[in-house]
Length: 338
Image (cartoon, rainbow, N blue to C red; front, side, top):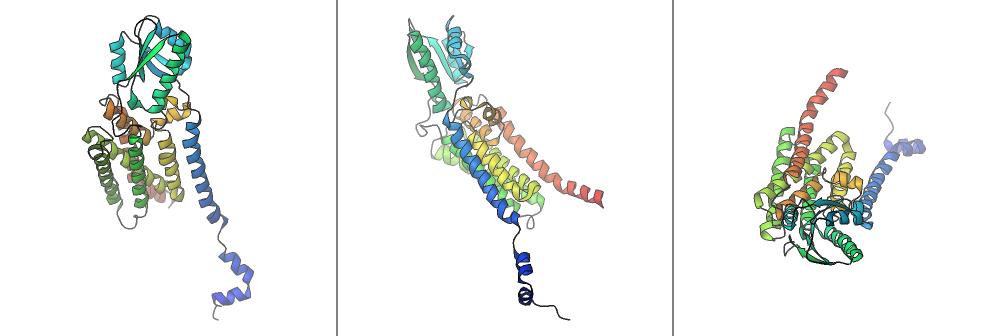
């Protein structure tokens, strides 16, 4: 006997047919909830962190027999006082990015404040406000000088952030696209694609922001290396999360890299002004590590660039290894259940 057609089935039992054709509730809820989580996290991170930034343990080199103690007593936990032997030693610490400012006496009732504009306007503004408050209460006058100014083509100090954001976004897009190539390219070829394209992304970004626009005055080769590692970290991590978590993996990568990572990078709001939790994870995520490296390479002779570069390399290598061993894990699981 011939089975009834779909239209006949619909006519015979319309309620059952519509029920069978109705999409599951999950198909409606999952994309909506993911989108809501992303928008809430994005707005909360970017706007929330800028609502009321407060300095905490802001490192300042201070010279003089009594001045370090007076500053610590007056400003409390807002600053971390680094006593310096003399003004030259304090300036050297500033130029190495060991501290955010250097403060010394400059005659009777006179203070000399040396800052590094390259650390960002939020940090230098906080230093000026703190030292100004102390000087006002002590009846002293402050003379301020920027010892490490920003380049002429980046007067707001945001070029490093925008470059890191752009490279992270490019790596994220690269990793997302690679998820759809499973049936086209062998895993080995996909990994080579991610690595090679990351180098191209890093090279192009470094050339545009550096020699072409002059907004990031870092040496070209170290900058290319840093941005290539950043792109690779974003690409491999996105591919890893999408591979292991399925459809939820890409939104998780969005939250981790593009939202939390960039919001806590310390570029728009200085790391010393972030809340404790954000400050803790700032240097551990790829965008934060990259921004620190870019700043150090551009203005502080790479004094503290090694640690953040290692962080970027570890993100890339760990994600690549986990992607590489996944087929072996699947085979072992299949053999164990067979």
